[in-house]
Image 1 (cartoon, rainbow, N blue to C red):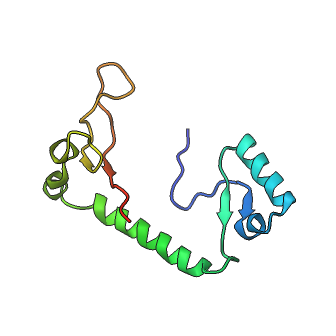
Image 2: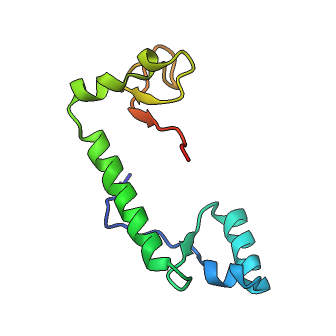
Length: 118
């Protein structure tokens, strides 16, 4: 079994957001087909107003999440989701805290829950 690396590309349909916003029926059909067949698609928003600003925001979000997960473990534990609130809506969950998909095994991932704030 081969694994994908960060330079791997998948042959997915490209859906133009600009065409969707123009209510282009062909683009709607492409989107529906992509969702039914692959379940995934590339969304191209380079041609819309403020597309460059959106790309910049997305790049900053990826950088933020990378920095967040690269914090030292002791710093991440300052935001332990079990300590911050009984509802577990915000915070950090370390790898192996919860039961995984296999009986007797722990989960194999860490995660952050970051709430929405206006």
